Image (cartoon, rainbow, N blue to C red; front, side, top):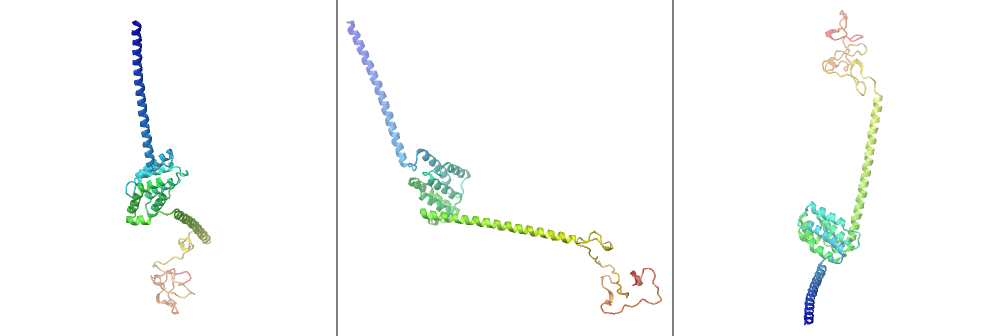
Length: 314
């Protein structure tokens, strides 16, 4: 009897243990199945998102880099204004530099985003056409379509506002070029830039020569002046106590005072008036000057009428 009880107890215990174990296993299997289903859903979601992503043709790392740049450029182009906040522009340019422009997958992407930024910086018909052309001719059609949908309308509005030009005219004047046309435009710009550089260099060289010629002329003038000064009278005092000019002796001028009579051969010359003119113009009319009255002996240095006696007679 006791053996039967023991057997029953053992059997019951085994049944209980088996049931518990089965429950645990089942619960674990259910949990594992639920996790598996969740992972499958996430994978499907990721696949669905990847199909919608414009960067699906890029590797994950490259896609993240382009997505980051796209976000910064979107902030810059987002508002329909010609002038953008400096911080947005700086962030966009910094992020653009982080993108490898030499990578074959990213070269056209880099060029397209750079042209968009340049249009915002310099909003005109030329830069807008470059941007629309770069976007249209990208290697990755998915990113190209994304950029057209995201940026093109706002870029057109930015240029229209900046140039005070009708939007339809802007659209018509900035149609994307074919790759061949775009290359021809680049070549033309390069040629014009080279010609402008050569012209600037020639202008600078000509200006340099003109400056050298002017300097030589100034030096020659200085030497000529120095040679002329070397031939002048030395000293600073001229005859009769007059001050010597730097260029030589200068005859003193009559400031309205008395001019002593000139004795040309001993004849009498009337004294000059206060204006420096000789009275009666006798010399010019060849009239002989009167001789002094006889009987009057002149002594000293005083002449008749109070005039000063010149040495040698009057």
